[in-house]
Length: 411
Ligand SMILES: N=CN[C@@H](CCC(=O)O)C(=O)O
Ligand SMILES: [Zn+2]
Image (cartoon, rainbow, N blue to C red; front, side, top):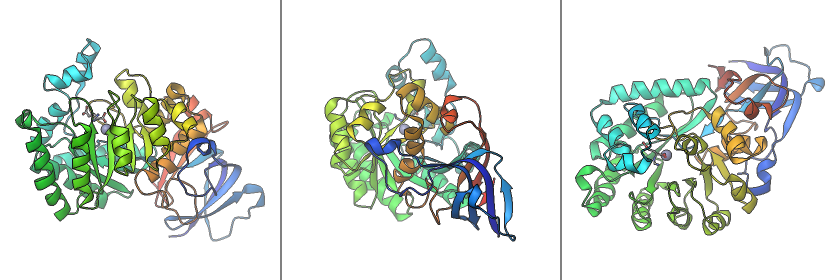
């Protein structure tokens, strides 16, 4: 391969900053170079600077950004990308007034997805998930975390994690796998929660570890799902196999999930629609990232996450899509960034940091991707010409992604 000179970049976003997680006031620091160039050698970023100082070396391949912005690709650190079928029937139920919990109570929700997943073979699930991921990459997602949690049986969870493993091996972007056996209590264990926790800790985890299928462990810590004691038990069992925690916390209620996650040293606590002062302060005083999922709040018509209070308290905030058939049937990170600004009053700079470098850190990838840094993989978004960076979230619903580069190749 050769060296590419990407020239006439209108705005080169997040170049030359350090690669640390951004928290509190630092979330608004987003270095932007105007009228810039970027050099990519093979699959890596190697150099950048201002066009006015640049002479294109003779042997370089030239690509013209034509005034578009260049950003690090989106780092989507919370998805449920592997699922068997959509659930628009429940969408209609919700339009007619049923709540998320009411739908779950009548066997819908996660259990509905689990029934369908267990009836679908691995190859079909792989093809469906691969197609979804390819579509998301065209929208700028260049690193992704994917959870299990629609199996809820030993075989079903292994099947999901094997699909994620195959995506890791076949797709050109970083893929991280999270074991979410504790997503819901399956019907068979409705009256035997201890039995299901034992299935997770004594059978699922050893089998998953034997095939090295997971990077993280997750629990849906929520009323009617897993309480804080069960959450800690599952995460501590995962830790014995080297799995760090990323927890579904404080979505529908102030569940204690944030405090539990922080005490467990979780990499992230995710959702955070329902936060009180103590949860915000606990998170701010920790190294745990608060991952906000605005499209899930939007789809469920819940109040948006309190991003401003979290950032003002000093938290490190990431943004992710939560792509899943029940509460966020979209994995479009451009929409997530817009919605974070419109619904949560995040500044464009904060939202872009949250969806790139902080999302990367929420997957343990902050020193490889999520910013324009020397020797990072060249995973980039090139946009249509835009008047400013703020135009990206402002023009919500408009697809401004012109091209996406993965490992130095336009895809
Ligand atoms: N809240 C828990 N899990 C998913 C929703 C899963 C579903 O409804 O299928 C979420 O993150 O929103
Ligand atoms: Zn989720």
